[in-house]
Image 1 (spheres, rainbow, N blue to C red):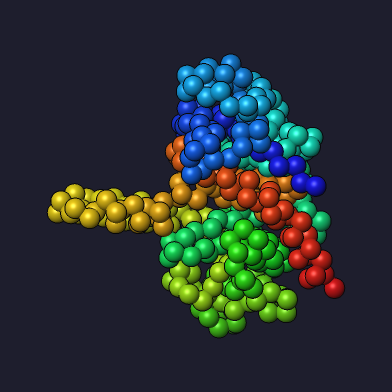
Image 2: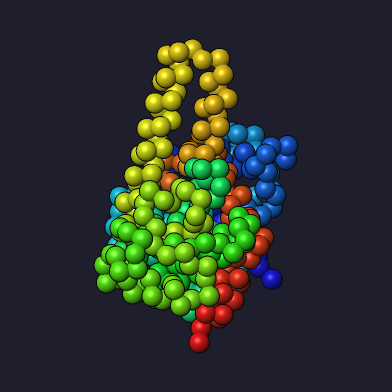
Length: 334
């Protein structure tokens, strides 16, 4: 049975610990839309700061506190920091999952440190060689899962097949997509297009049991023909940063135009647009392929993003997505 408790790194992110604790307060409100049972939460970080912060927010929820004396900064080199700071909130939080105290870990902190700590500390699922980072966007009003977003910048064809298997399982389990359509991000639709890596991956995917629809170009990701998009970590990370910048630009431009024209209906339009493009509505990115649910949030996350990441972790645990990934891998194996 999956341990349904969730470890939250209170010290991770550009605005920690305040924003993270604000997110905790949101999910602990039993009357709120983002409610998660506080008994499922383990907060890891400087215990004194956490107690003071919760007290200041009048939060008396029954969350468990796990002390971590050190913090890995956003600009620190992951490998060096993990070796130098074994008592930091990221390795301590991952250690809680490894020890069986929880099933999930969330951090808005140093992405490389989270990936490194999770991969080394938890190990990978049986059959998975390299984990991948997946995001799910709802920009067109329906979920589209994209991976890898930066965990593996120089993958092998087999890694991309595994990402497709994991992304398809995630889309099915968490978002309820039936028989997800999987596409390979490329510079053209023809099977002969792209690098040696992409052509080899195309062949593997074509021979898999997945619902592979072939190559997709970047402009087709938000169309109606694909539910899961697979790419290498370098391309995926560039795409992610472009998407974030474009979303921010769109929100700013629409806000300015509505304000300039004093549109009475503007608030409703803006709220609907924000729901589709603002990353704070969707929590964080899932590190798929490790023995546990690991979510990496944006360093600039606000309280709502933190709360949604907690709900995202709870959902992934409740449906036991990792067990289904292992089953999907077994089906693919000869």
